[in-house]
Image (cartoon, rainbow, N blue to C red; front, side, top):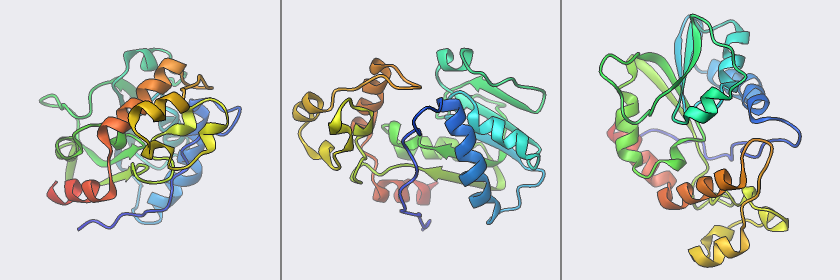
Amino acid sequence: MPRLDTRPAPHVVPHGLTYFEYGRLLCADVVIPWVGARLDLAGLDVGDFGAHNGGMLDALRDAGVVASAIGLEISEEIVASSPFVGDDRFRLEVADVTAREPGAPTFDLVLMHDVLEHIPDAEDAVAAITEALRPGGHLFVTFPPYYSSFGGHQHLARGRVRSVPFLHYLPRSAFFRLARPAANEYMTAEGALSDMLSVRQARLTLGRAERALTRA
């Protein structure tokens, strides 16, 4: 069975940073060193699944280690507004990572940072995503388990309630009456609400993730 690192991932964007800058910083300072200590990144083709606006792609390119990286993001609007400038080896594309097209590219390493908790059917999603791995390939996944302290993404709410842990244990009506989503540096209030609704629908736990990864 896969062993999951249960330490909390940095999930809140530091004040003043755009999400692109946050993704770039996170990848350069956390993801690349962590993965690089366990896997030789030299010459690998990397897929960033759920790439948002390409901050992690920018860091991967600047690191000068991997051969290529393709970011897949489901939102056409996010891709269209991305500051990332692609080239022949590093690019950002619109795609649903859970519905692979015939002939879609495969990768030595797939990154999924804070994506899986938004997908209702984690088992089918992981099975589809692992089809993008080449033989011997690796999948790197981070997510906040639903029953962790901020698994309901209440950090996206306005006011002091955003700092209250385990608030999402409340019934839905009570939770959303207290945790009213707010706009922030990278998301509108409507986007924050969609984000909070998706994690509540998925309710991804460590146990479910382990089972999905084991089967895949």
